[in-house]
Image (cartoon, rainbow over all chains, first blue to last red; front, side, top):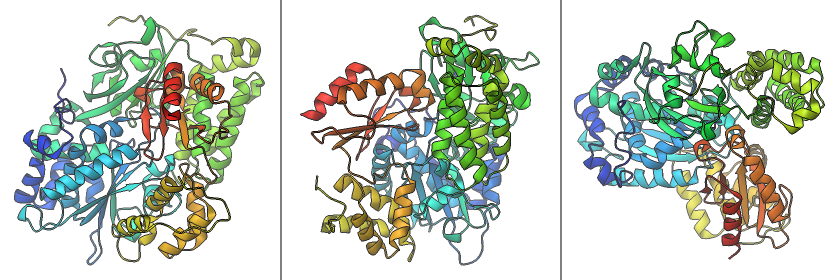
Length: 449
Length: 169
């Protein structure tokens, strides 16, 4: 069985309470950091660990921390991004529900490293139960002297608050999140300046995903070098994968990066194979924004190498034949699913969630939704397929924030790999309303491992 | 739940005001506007939706312009700008939930409640709507009910029936 760093104690009864978490060795990282390390030592360990941002972009966390400006007389902030909204991703909800103290411990150590005296956990508003859980856990930690003034007699002060969002996917983008935290609409800011220079209320700010902050705890406990030994190449450590769709065992799995995709899908330790004895048609491996891949390309790269669950392997082949690890939102499609309908569903999502600031995204996402809708409902023309490719191309790279790219990639990749299915919707509009296209030529393997 | 119409002026209870004031202490001085989103949640939990008089009152309390409240309340999907049923059943309608039957659940809900998406049942008890990804794809299909956003997972038609019956009690 693979090593677990984050979810090791998840089945211990009462692990969501301070006392049990502490008995299981919780808050050791706070003691170690505050009593025997300098803030720069903590940053150095995180750099050594090779930890990459677990929210989706995969930027090295230690490097992000080292960019933080430290002007005299200005407050610095750490903001945890718990606005988990990427379709297919639900690992942060899981962590906050069952291991709230792991996140709080990570927040204390990370805030200490960055010199933040006040930190916020920005949780999407719909996660009201998780907000309650975190507020209770913060009160417990404060009661035990791990938050507030002069923590463990170290002279370090920290206040930690939970901030609810209002329901907006865009607030997962760090500058939109900052705007939202300030009580405004979630319109992303133009970068530069980056939040590390000018973030919340114009002060230097680091925004990190829930899982990234939780991972700081084992990194400090065991050392960055130990963490870096796990994984594969530049994909170090463990990663939480949210598995959903047509599989036997949907759920959150902690994997060592580098696990073969085939093992992840078919092994009983993970997804347990495709549900109802059906065959795999396609996978979206890293949340709805990343390119969809047909079954043959998710299991093996274009050169025939086994595909691995790592940043590098999942993007092998570029967008022509590869995808991205993204947030680790792993969505599996069985042979009965319709790619056109799914692509329309995602397009509607991005249209709904576009903040409306940049014309290419505001207008383009609406166009894509409309054109995909008519293809799905039997009114499409053959030229619509290239029109979609054209609109997607004109959004990509032409917006302030990555939502434009995130909206364009699913559409472009679906047509790249499943063009025949789109064409069939045009040539067989009535049939397409009655049945699905099926597997056609995508199944090149059997359900055997 | 208090009944509020568009025209009625609003006075917040002292309990609400105390909660507002506690939230404001979480931010640096003069940055009280940051309390806007959490305060709007409290207002909605109290009245069931966010009316213009309520937003004006929030603006007054936070010493910001009314437009700063309107633009926020209209941007975020959780704030209701018109009255809803006592229980708003919000079903996730995004990709992963649809792979395992969310669309059928929404059709069934429409049939059982007898109202279209966004409308309120004649007894004032229910409204329903499709919402975007709730980050619970492993428990799909899912729905949530405010103001505490309790979750109902692995939905089936039987579970929808059960839920509606329980809420009617």
